[in-house]
Amino acid sequence: MGDRRIAVVVYDGFQLLDLAGPADVFATAALIARGGYHLDVAAAEAGPVRAHNGVTTTAVAFDDLTDIDTLLVAGGLSAPQHLHLAAPIARLAGRARRVASVCNGALLLAEAGLLDGRRATTHWLVAEDLAAAYPRVEVDADPIYVRDGTVWTSAGVTAGIDLALALVAEDHGTALAADVARGLVVYLHRPGGQSQFSTPMRTGVPRSEPLRELRAYIDANPAADLSVPALARRAAMSERHFSRVFTRQVGLPPGRYVEHSRAEAARRLLESTDAPLARVARDCGLGLPETLYRTFRRRWRISPADYRRRFQHREA
Image 1: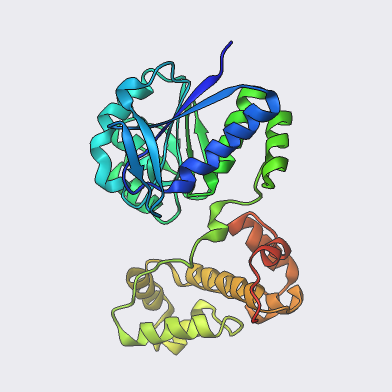
Image 2: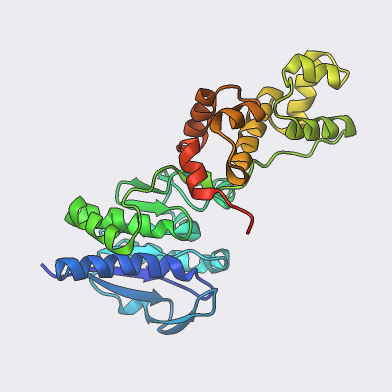
C-alpha cells in the first residue's frame, strides 16, 4: 500500500501554522515509520499562495489532485472571504476517505454542507458566529478537536497539531503518534479544552446606570456578600424584580454572573500572583480550595495548579 495523500486546502491570507503544524506531524510520522504520508498543498489555481504572515507557499491546483486520502482545510482571517471555495471543497471531499479542518477552516466545510447534522468545533473566537450562520451544525466551542464519523474539526492554530496527531494515531496506532509528539516536543493529548485559553465571558452592558455600577461592584469585590438578597438591597429593588431586570439587561441570572465573575477573578489571581490556592479561593469568594478545584475542572477541565503553571506571568 502506498503513502496516504494529504491535501491541504489554502487560499490567500490563510494561517500558515494551520498548514505547517499538521505538515510537520505527517512528515515526522513518515520519517519515523519510513513512509506513510505524502502531502500536497492545494489551491483553486496552481502557483504561489501568500499566508497572512507574508510567507508564500506553492500550491497545486484542485483539478490536479489525485488519490486523496485526507482533505484538510486550513483556516485564516481571510476565510470568510473565500466561501466560493465551498463547491470545489465539496467535490474534493467526495473523493476523500476523510475530511478535516483547522481553526475557522470549519467555516468552509460548513458552507460546503459537510458539517450539516454533525458536531464540530472551531476557534473559540468564532464559534458563536459559526453556530449562528449554520444552525444545522452542532458547534462545541471547547474541545481541541472533534471527530464525527469521517469528518474532523479542530480548534484554532496550534490545535491543528493535536488534530494531525489524532489522525496519525487512527492510521498507524498510538505508539507512532506518541513518538511523533515526543519528537516535536508537544502533548500527545493536550489536557483541558480551549476554554482555558479564551478571554473572559462576554455579557450585555446594562442599560441602567445602577446596574452598570452594581456589575462593576461584583467584579471588583468577589469576596463580598454577592447573594441575590444582598445585591437586590444594594440595587434598591425587590429580589424578584432585581433578578428579572438583571437577567434581561446582562444576559445571565445574577447568581450565574457572580459564579462567572468569581471564576475569572480566580483565574487572574493565579496568573498574576503566587498566593496559595487557599488564599486564592478565599479572596475570589469561592471559599475553599476544593471549591476552587471543582470550579476549574468544570469550567476549564484543568486544575488550578496546572492552570497557574501554564499561564502565570511575572513582572520582569
